[in-house]
Amino acid sequence: MTGSQETGRLFGRRTVVAAVGAAGVAAALTACGGSDSGSPSGTAAEKPAGGGAEAGGGGDAGAVLAKTADIPEGGGKVFADQGVVVTQPTAGQFKAFSSKCTHQGCAVKDVVDGMINCPCHGSMFDATDGTVKGGPAKQPLPAAAIKVEGDSITLA
Image 1 (tube, rainbow, N blue to C red):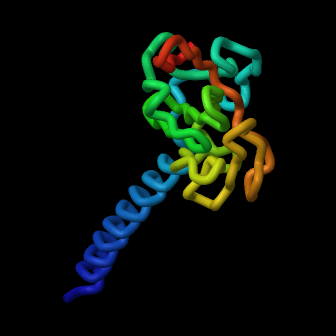
Image 2: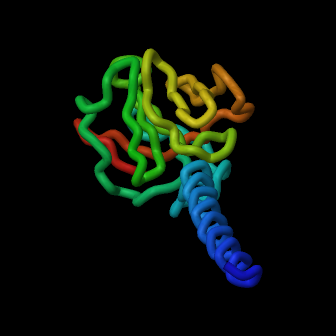
């Protein structure tokens, strides 16, 4: 094999390896960066709404998220497509927060034992008020707007 053939062969391999590496980085950044078609991160205003819910950013207003019976007491449920996590800290009290971790923007995974958990770096947030209970996140989850009417929970 001549020197130029060897160089061409190495260049081709390097190009493929670089392309695969770039695709992996893009996938990782997409997973950590999240997507929020609603309001920009951190702009959610907190104000009372019906049924103990709090108001704030993102999602499709009026869209039914769940029935109240779908949200376990002391736990919650993540609605990834709407960018919101809904919790029920005590019976009949429903709260909602952005599902985007304030550390690096990963989507939170679940709500267990009163904690909203981020799978990327282990941040934990209180399901009652969104405050940080375990880092590396330093900022609380912003409140999100929901409305509880009867047995339905909707985005406000």
